[in-house]
Amino acid sequence: MEYSKTNRTEPRNPKPKTLNPKYGTLFVVSTPIGNLEDVTLRALRVLKYVDIIAAENVTHTKGLCKHYGIKTKLISCHQHNQKVKVPELIKRLKAGDNMAIVTDAGTPGISDPGRYLINIAAKEDITVTPIPGPSAVISALSVSGMPTEEFVFLGFLSNKPGKRKKELLRLASESRTMVFFEAPHRIKAMLTDLKEILGNRHMVILREMTKIFEEVKRGPVSEILKYLIPDKLRGEFTLVVAGSETKEAYTLSEEVTDRIKELIAEKKNSIKDIAGLLSSQEGPTYRQIYKECIVRKKELERIEADRAGQKT
Image 1 (tube, rainbow, N blue to C red):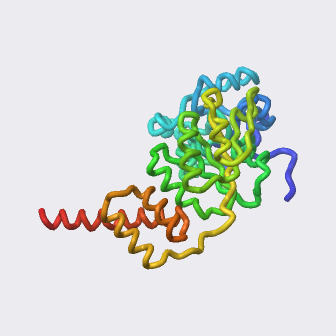
Image 2: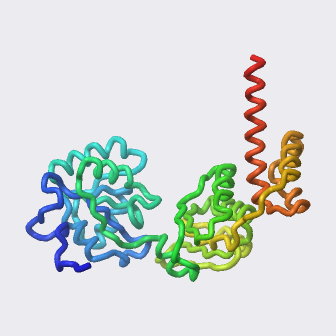
Image 3: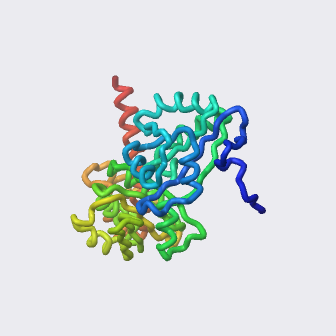
């Protein structure tokens, strides 16, 4: 593919024609994930050119703009006010204003606000164009040393322990390298669940990427948990976790399935205890039995609910 020296949507003086001549263009601009120097020349030019910048956090983006002498008007647009703000922004785009959308760090729409505005703009036939740049996902993968031919980005798992464990169970046989984001107040609980359900996988944890106190730690999950002393629980974390090396092909026997039903019906042991007991006695893995326990427990709950309904 050949590239011309000037991009048809690039800001130049005088203002260029956009891809849709009726409306303005929405530029999805990637901004630094830490170090302010990690921004492209094109991103800076676009931010200076557009009529307005829709920012996740106006105060935060003001710092970037001040550093680079950008005087473009800023307007707040985040997940808590987007239902009110987006219609206003769409009107401005339809009136011919060019606009940039930015988040606090990285690329809008990638586990960050922005998707709602982008989606509405695209539906309204407004030109949406990417201004690529920093990405915590790609940055973490690039230094992980793990296979990157295929990977899966999973963002933040649920902050509810039960739901988080179910999400991890669905990943038990995932063979691709996995990338997660996690907040400091949840990181230890998340890794504890990950070790319990996925096993003591090799992983890389990155903290304060591209900043002064950047840290990269490698090792099995158990070692990473030891590393996470209180002083380390600051800033957002990016986790790169090895995929499963073997796919679970073992089929639960009828005897094991019947035993699971019996133990679930007795209601004396937790699912975790049942999985631990049967995996040590019968041969299937903890994760396989855990999954089957969840299925059988839901079945029993449905049956009991139906019976209760019939009685009333």
